[in-house]
Amino acid sequence: MNPTDLKYSEDHEWVRLESDGVVTIGITEFAAESLGDVVFLELPEVDAELTSSEKLGEVESVKAVSDIFSPVSGRVLE
Figure 1 (cartoon, rainbow, N blue to C red):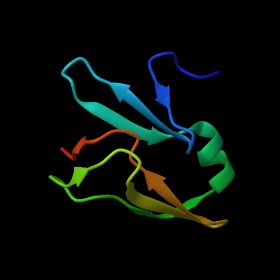
Figure 2: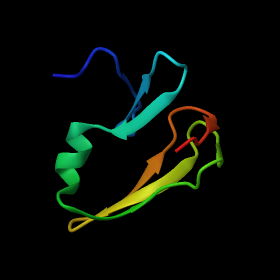
Figure 3: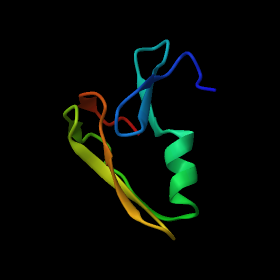
Figure 4: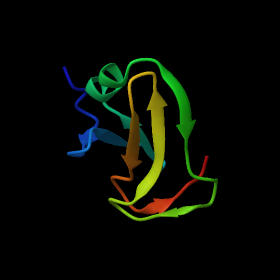
């Protein structure tokens, strides 16, 4: 079951618009389960500017390495 407050991309990322206008980004449960145990995560630096559909990082698991794409444009706050 998918939470109703999330919007999903075709690449298995999700976004949640918080009440203060900040957007939180994550990967879907399906993507996390498909990857298995995560051994490394590369994320952008604080203040990095992201463009929608741009690679923002990657997640490496015992099974695979997968790119993470930004579902929205904006600046990384944390």
